[in-house]
Amino acid sequence: MTTATSADAMPQVDQLVTRACERALLEDFGGDSWREGLALLVQSVESAAAVGEDGRDYVYGQFVDALWNRLRVIDHLKQHPENSRERIERPLVILGLPRTGTSLASYLLDQDPQRRSLLTWEAEDSVPPPSTHTLRTDPRCLKKKAELDKLAEELKAANIPIVHWDEADGPTECTFVQNQDFKAYLWEAFMPTPAYADWLLEADMTSTYAYERSVLQILQSRAPGTWSLKMPSHAVHIETLLATFPDVRIVWAHRDPFKVTASFLRLNNLSRAVLGAGIDVAEVVANVLRQLQAHVTRPLRARERIGDDRFFDLHYADLMRDPLGVMGSLYDWAGDELTSSTERTMRDWLGRNPQDRFGIQPYSLDEAGVTIADLEPVFDEYLSRFDVELERS
Image (cartoon, rainbow, N blue to C red):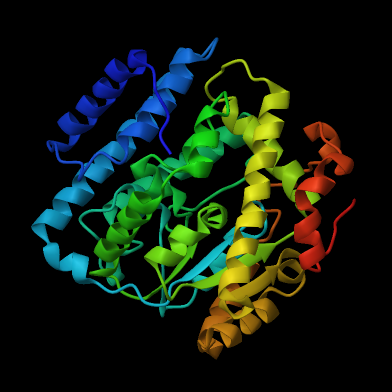
């Protein structure tokens, strides 16, 4: 799918590209699959009313960071063509609705030394790739950790809620790699209108998943392991995921979709406030509901095609009650060994990281501006297919 973008956006796009090239001292982006998405994002920002200068600078700075890392990834592949022969076998990928416990599951899986997670710091600064021994001691990791520690203190001092948090040396979402092809819901979360989101729903994601595969090949070249990946929106483009990683093992995370919607809308309101632009609340709600419906209907269609045995159903309620029991069931399904040492490490991690360590973050549909009646048509097929425990409180 292609979308016409205003010529007014192109000078700004070119400026962002120039900034990235000058910073990296490189010019080869490995093709131009990223350009249409970036142009649409810039057009969305430039055409919105009342965008604040600080917000624009922040978002455009994020664009430059993504372009900068892409330049370096492409250059590394040219210098090390053998990385392209790295085999990514039987990755475990968590997808589903957002706000469903995917972070908890991915952090528990990360305690297994046989697994390989995409860490927060290396997703955005991928080359040179770290070794197994420097994954969490690389100076880039320590720098990112210091930055995030400072940010956490600033948010706490300003009484700004921390709704979602990734540690510098912890597993993060694939969106922080896919954003470098500029087809990612990370970018959509900042946008004041649904133009980019609607384009992304129908975008050809082939180049995006190919780019992610290249990044994973680079990263595993010096720090191998069976990949455990997570990104709820893999559900939206699940057919491209399957085409790129044919032996992928899919973990479908389930949670009460009414609670999910309330939490996700709250997160959307916080992220969209960054630009300072005027927001049409009704338009945002409709946009989010289109996204959430795609998160359930598209994997349902894929599941009908490839069969139930390719999916492990991970239920949020069960994960909260008995995380180690759920991990045991997941390992049995995946055909992997959950050693007593890994189970002990998982238990220790849970002890250090209680669910409410950033405080309790209440949310409800009432404050989100939608009702259960509004959502029932969106999730009717999903709820009729799965026995999802509802959290009506």
